[in-house]
Amino acid sequence: MDRLIAERYPGVPQMTTGQLAATLDTGRRPVVLLDARAEEEYAVSHLAGAHHAPTVDEATRVVLDSPPDALVVAYCSVGVRSSALAARLRERGIAEVHNLQGSLFAWANEGRPVYRGHARVAEVHPFDVRWGTLLQEARPGESAP
Image (cartoon, rainbow, N blue to C red; front, side, top):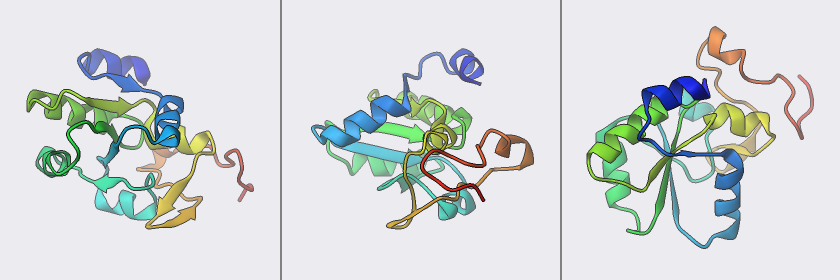
């Protein structure tokens, strides 16, 4: 999947989940998280503080209302939709935008926290049956169902 995304969106910088976690942990720079998924996916869980912004117009509004030095990171389930969103933002002149490599599935599979509103939850929307196979049933730090 990473190779496909790199080939399809060569101009979009990729940020690993570890890099994002470290950036968030330091708090030295504002981070704007853009969730490019559909409303029903976002409603199940998302990254803490993420903005639901599935279109380039919605994402542009969020970014323009953010601090000018903010690091913008888009994510979706696996990185395809968020890479497309990041590419469109870059076309609009927003250069400091990255795609979260592996996106929410990689983040959750590593046992990193996801939220529904302000409550930490274990569920992640699988998108569909095929893509859902990329989600581990038992993730680090969670009990098996």
